[in-house]
Image 1 (cartoon, rainbow, N blue to C red):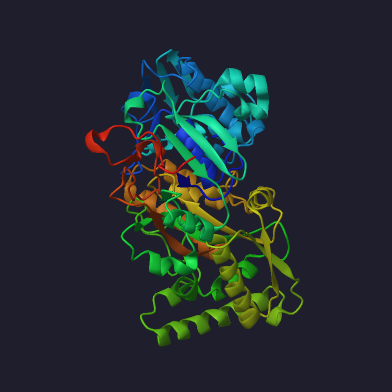
Image 2: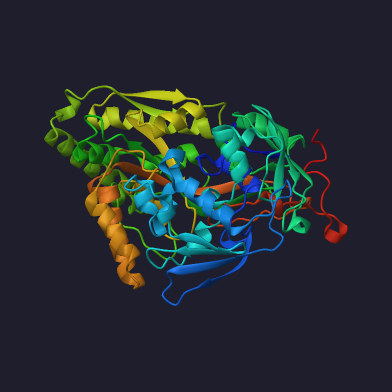
Length: 534
């Protein structure tokens, strides 16, 4: 049994946004590639191989002859054509449709510039051959093809049931598992898909993914043996993190993820970059990681974390303080940052905070752990803004589904955010803030930023490409600041390595359920994912 965190909002791989939803969808639906459990990179999935044209613009994928849905129907190239067209169609309202910007015609369709879905650069050459034409050479394209939105879904079921298609019984699944049951606010039960092309490698016949907002309850279930895995640190009490990481069954690792907050730049006074920069300057990042998160996170002023494909990010707001090597120098740097912030705020028309309207900071609330950590960070920010800028910020805790909905609809002033890299290149972070990206969620639009990313996409020289990306990120985290970054994550999961195998640390934090198996003689498939699962 795996504790999966918050209740899944949906398991439709094309519209989901939350990590709990994504873990379930990845077990049920697969694309041309799937995530390698050791590296987090895209490796052959429903396609056993692919060819790349000499100019890097055309990928020809060869589907497996035994690719099939869990209900037995074969999966053909036309199924991918239909699935990808649905995913990029604005009617679907997929926040991750920006992944199709790499495909010829994808951006025009996703942004509504054209409604001709057939102009997307894909075609079925024959039932077993799927061809993709890209806008620019994209070396990480096989990694993108492992993303949930790129998975193949059952056309007949979707056309019959519309948005309710995931409620079909049976639900045709293309991944290693099929859906056995879903008891809201309790668990999702998966059963191994006998028609999966790699059924022999699926580690557990049955898997339960438990939902719940209380990390304390999750930890107790784990410690009593009722849960086998805590697969995400949001279900681990943050106040115990520095103690738990010393246990042999709690495993900490670096991965590509950043914690930040967004401004709604369509609302005054956050439409003024000077206001946003002032707020970003006075946040005490070091205090947050030392006193609140306490698991080895690194304070950060840039969005892209260390290890993003060899890219070195620029200095963002508050970076000078992060260079301090001792407490005295840090205090001096923070005082200098506060003075600059006060100057910017006065220049924007709010000297000492005078006339600045009350505003709210929204975050997802729950039973503790990660949710309590969000609140504690909010309290820390609230105190910093009051002390240094004279601003009154109210905290607005909301439940998970409201948080996701209000963030997508820009129903907030400031809101907690985070991003886990989907592939090992800086664009997995920077593309989020393109004007037309469904993951932008700030209202910020910059033709200069979009142009820099477009130029970087067309630049074959790695050094020149990274220089363009650094210029774009400088605009994002220092000059315009629609977001303010706080720290780079560390990952943490819990399981007994003497009982289980197949879960590995990797930079993208991908831990495919199909790879997990009980340690048994001969490596036979485990009957269930938990000896105690009902």
